[in-house]
Length: 158
Image 1: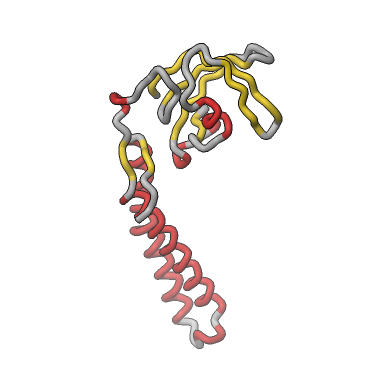
Image 2: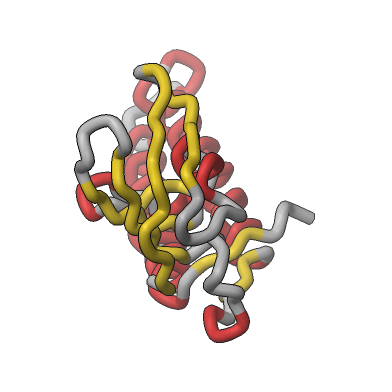
């Protein structure tokens, strides 16, 4: 049994949609490639057949991994979250103490991270540094570029 991970309803729906696509569309494509390669003759010297079989094996591994993720997925009941502290699914407005820039980070599961929309993974250095902190806290976070010192201005639910 895999590790339980938490998702938003949208995040879990996207995961299920991708799994369905792999199982219905990609599986058929790979089976077709195997059939076409098999029709070309001697399988012992057929590189296309070997490549298609390897592709099938990789696809099946990916499907199994995603099925495990879906099976162990839980929807987080956001109404029960303590919003006085930074948690998963928090929107955290912070002020950079060095340059006074104000930024809002949305803390999400790894699978939903998207830096373009300021959705950062709960496993990222910034999220780890903010977790459990409250409004008014000044936090020093180690990041690849050095240290980031921020003050938490506001915490909301995403």
